Length: 498
Image 1 (cartoon, rainbow, N blue to C red):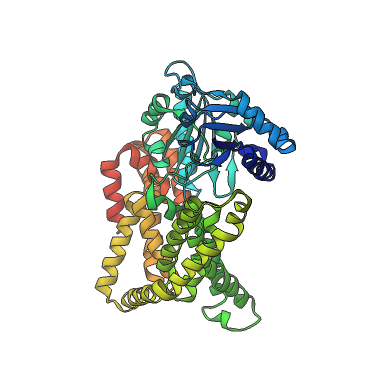
Image 2 (image 1 turned 60 degrees about the vertical axis):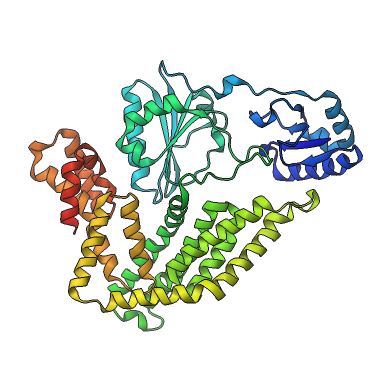
């Protein structure tokens, strides 16, 4: 009899491994075949507190058992399962959307690639709109310094709606089973009321991918495509860029060439910033692109591919290619390679890292590294030798991109271009990007001070915050103004930014 084994992830990896190994050995004696595909299963054995709400189990004989008994007496446990398993029907009520009337208890999570502006502005927008409607609300921010205003298990249990406004992958395991609606920080910030209406109407129970260890467990959704994976890599790379850049700037404060004198503080700062932080920039980018695609199995080949991108001279372009290649190869091996139960534990610690690292490493050395290095070298040479007119044109294009959507995809594309060129010691484009990125929030802040009568009290206060954010190179400070009057604010910012 073909049997599907489902083990609750909350029981721990060690106990789950013991149970799978012992039950796998006992199954052969009991003439049972442990399989991973629920569609082929005739019976399902669930180890945990409850049967997962999975339509793939409908109509199949299901037995809910205790993992301790399964480990202690595997043969007897399987005999009981065969004799007492009953046909299962997934409860219909569990898939119903959250009620559309009455006050709500809402919890929300916000996260953006940089973990600075969009994360907190979206949180504020959700809180404001929810309170207008008389809802109880608490928003957890997954920012650059970790989780803020953390939601407790008691608050999760009491909530009847979960809203996730995230542009990157975030851990949502604690919300398992709760009605959830997912959106982006941009929509949550600019179309808050509409998104809350959609949340009420479209929320469905959330089933975390790691809750049950079966083939029905799906890998991360690719609905956001390559863009989300790239932004995840950029979000982990940014602290390296900031820390390294500031250390280099401090070194230059002692003199432009002061770092050339061994043993001095300027030399130490340059070693920290340029020699260490910037050296890790591309490997971290590649590693976390792969991590976003394949989870932990992708991290090792991604980091190795990123280091090879640096050593082969292919820079950030090679790092991006290595990250995607490592992620998809690791994911392919993880999902497609089937091993006996006794060898399954070797897959994440030996087989996936070894094979994926070899494939990515050889590809970077023999296929990708040199051609991409040639392209990057040509681009660098063109940027360093272009005339004044071309430099002005490039600066205008990058400046306009920085001011177009203020932290959105176009803004991030321009910023990523500038950051990538830092590894080739080409600083001109980044200077234009930095200057233009500060324009929208500074312009809005100054406007609220110069023409105070044209802005209400809340906008004047927002202008003060925008000034501070602008000085910190956070373009998102202008978003509240752009959201209220995009037809006038955006063109003005683009023109001035260029």
